[in-house]
Length: 471
Figure 1 (cartoon, rainbow, N blue to C red):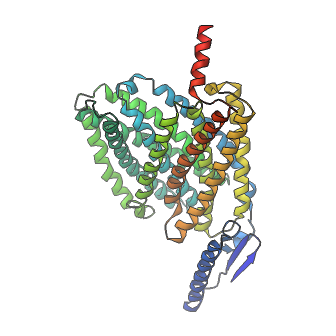
Figure 2: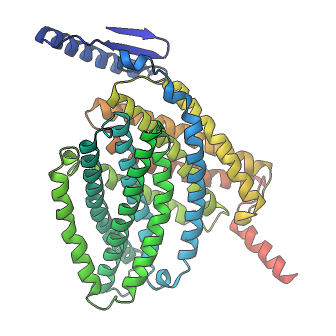
Figure 3: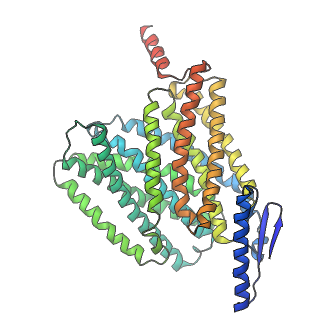
């Protein structure tokens, strides 16, 4: 039977022996709760109440993971912000390196590859976290099968995504520079570099995430609270290092057949990993599904990249602040979506209003630490005053709130329509906040500059540098 109690709508499941009549009653009860969920959401009440499924065993552990959310998630969020800053600095150094200057299409490849790879690794973290919370990793054979299957699936997705990113970046390079001379060797160099970096970085990070989640299970830590943020930040650093190394190696042999041989090896490995996935019952269904959100997310994020490129030379601090702004909001939203998905799979309950407010509040100390660091070290050559800090803080809270709301709505909608949220929500979520965060930041910087509250224009920075040189 269903009962309405405060923040919850509960469905008690008894342990009676199965029989046709009992099964029919349960099916009818499930349909009734599904209709009730639709009714609640149509009345805009889904933000306050949520359909959950409860068993007598779960009642004893009510709110166990809610109480540990802040303690477990806050360190991972701080590490993720450090990783985002390091990745930004590393990207800035790579853009002035010899390999990037010789092949400028690598500038186009970077954001596309990082977006695709980030979504794949966060999807893996969400799936494996759900499996951990369902207890599927407690039994040796199923644990090994899940690990091998997910890592093989990650290789298939990474290699295909790497090929797409390489070809797309080469094509965009032709569009943006129509008069430039290109060749087959340059195209195969771009594709091979992308596929190699995608495959090796996915292997490294995939193994790391599996081990991390197993450790979390061992010490009774909810991996939903830490896996996605770490996958996002560490994955960017690993991908940047592997891409720069592989590109530097292949660029020396660009005019030879070496890049073609590397491409063939990478291409042949796709069906080999695909065969492993096809024979694995846990991930077989994912071999041909989940590609649509990855491609659409790549297109949406490309729009954010175009916006960023258009304004990065117009306003100071855009390149420094944007990755942290959208990265932290996306990490908080992914934690929320992953927790909801786990509860839907496990048929357990949780006070989602408490979780949402907790995650929103966790944005405050992390952003404060970040603002203190950039002020103390004078990063970005910004004019630090009250209006700058206040405006950036308000934007960060708005972005986080929007990301949490989008994450919840998407998770519920995909679940209602029969899709696994672990494979569909995060790509759309991160791509959406990329655009929203970039638009908000640029808009506020424009307002601050036009009103004279804080001059964020690059012309002021250039004038300051000229004055300093003349002195």
